Length: 521
Image 1: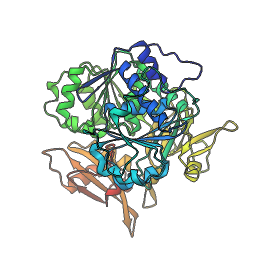
Image 2: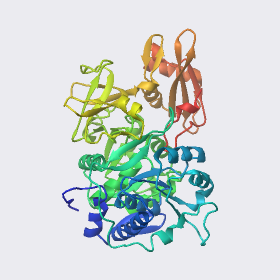
Image 3: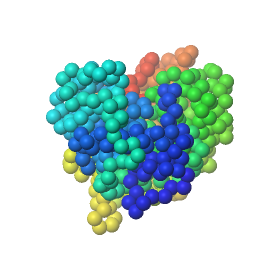
Image 4: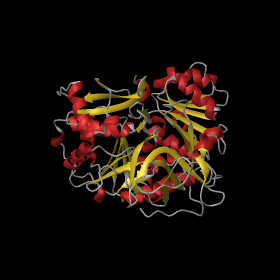
């Protein structure tokens, strides 16, 4: 599909144009439903009119508290068409956190599902800003007790104009979405992203992934997670098909679906790749249609690179790095993965990056410092958190501009390839030296038999902080702490060797599958 836009392109032009040019093409496969671009466009138009009729105005927030479903996809596009700001919240969120989010962003509308009524009912009742609550999955006409402004999903999409969306009043500098960070180190912060931010990110990422109209992209990551959301955005930008599932919990079921649908794009995270590595029957699946595999956050461990190249010999493997505040920072071109396996690559197209010391001065190649990102993907700031915003967004090289200080320690080689060292907040100070947990974790992950690893600092009277490692061993593997210590001593500098190593059955994780270190002691 050739992308063309009007004079002011907005994010939902992706769906509008795909529906105009490919109305009968299946855009979404989700829980045995197959929905075309034309159908998605019509239903989201109707829902957008219902939102507008309920009083949702330009710039109002619409919270979508739901799983990876057809309704969630429709709701995201409907919020944009209603000139509002979409905020997808993971359905695993508990009531107290949902209350915090509703109090924080003060939405005009909440779209959710009846099966999580016990979670959203009280927070929704307490939120005085809600003008409407739209609930899918209501079997009869009864409204949830105490929610007089609640409507059934079927009613909300039945009465509105399906032929066209409400009158467009936004420009590309308006907010398109608020994506809440996980809040592992404090209260969640809402990352404000404009239409321009998200359009720029999609264009940049789609260009280096070489996305095509015949792409079939797997989506098993939550749409509430930016990595998951962008799979939908980039699929619809290309006129491709999105195969949306709730998770990778049942890998055999997902692999069968991948084969049946002819999936060509496989976005994953280390947790998913660890599951794949343990599947004895993996070779039984014909995954030859996979064209590319992506990973984000830190660089892939070498064992995962080797495993992915073995499973997907014809696929391009992309190791990538980014953060919600600018979506994506770097990607490692597949041709370089053997040459620079521990790198997260070069700056994505239309983005600049450099590394600074504690005084904000640029550093020489090979020197560890804080990564700075400049480009149109950089967020507007944190929702109503000016102090937190000021710590991240600072004056750039040109008058009046702001650049993103990521809070991540990195280094860059002479060729401009980036190496992630660690989060500044995570750095362990032991024996007067700075230890990056990620570096120790990567080493542990490359020990045969280690499935997952997490490293933290713990108080120590002599060392200041001692390095403590938690490891999950692969099924059937037995290793003692002494054996693991010996491996560490042969691979790490002395001050980086963990003082304590604990083998555990599993590691606590966030809703998006990242290891949650706040649960480790």
